[in-house]
Length: 291
Ligand code: ADP
Ligand code: MG
Image 1 (cartoon, protein in one colour):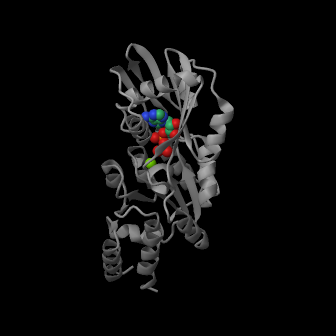
Image 2 (cartoon, helix red, strand yellow):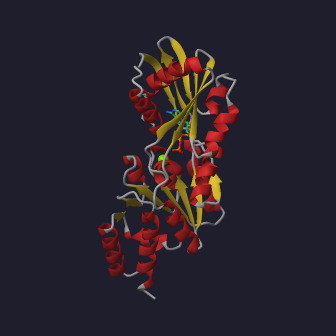
Image 3 (cartoon, helix red, strand yellow):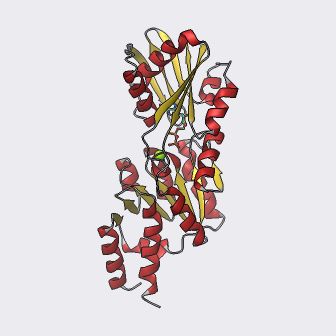
């Protein structure tokens, strides 16, 4: 593209909340044939709320919430915030917590009022020798696109908390526009298979990578590059920064973590998913002027 075409496209982008860090990305974005979306905060609004409590024993429902919320008050994860807010609404007071460890992409552990508490996905609980999951109800919730977080205390399974996050208004139309341009859309998430598939189905995404640990997101991007795809990665989390850097084009949501915005080549300040297709249109437009 000519310097003028690049300048015009960058200016148009900026006016529309799309910050393109360097003209070179406009020379690449029009070639993208694979767009990988992070789930939480990228395709979804990123403000999850608690929808269901599934105690193993009804009389322990309050204890389940109290222990989970006390521990999660030490987490910066959106799921943790959802649990703390819910406990607050239910007027459940928090207990003192020590020895907190955050297990990125899996959950959080610590001592709550002298009890060893684990809150996280089923893998984390299984790794810590917890059994007796309520599978039928929780799987139903996951198939409704909800994230299920399990809670154990003192080595005993207390039950689960289901959390839902709204899909962004324009996610479906953005994916449809990509498909019209012959661009494959992928969903990548640390969330479990059932939830990830349910969200993908709702949006119309056919390629799903679920249960991906934060450290492995970049590896997945690399694999798609190796297979010859020109890859754009779209994300918002600290988790996503290495994957944003590994892609041909990293696109960050302006509502995301600073690290993600720094690692990206393009930042979408308004945080609507349509910013992704708009960035590709801008690139196509800039390149067209030389023909
Ligand atoms: P995503 O890729 O959707 O941003 P993460 O990698 O942050 O998800 O987390 C993956 C999974 O790990 C979550 O779906 C949840 O099951 C579990 N998890 C992570 N952090 C927490 C937490 N603070 N409390 C409970 N569960 C958590
Ligand atoms: Mg995210």
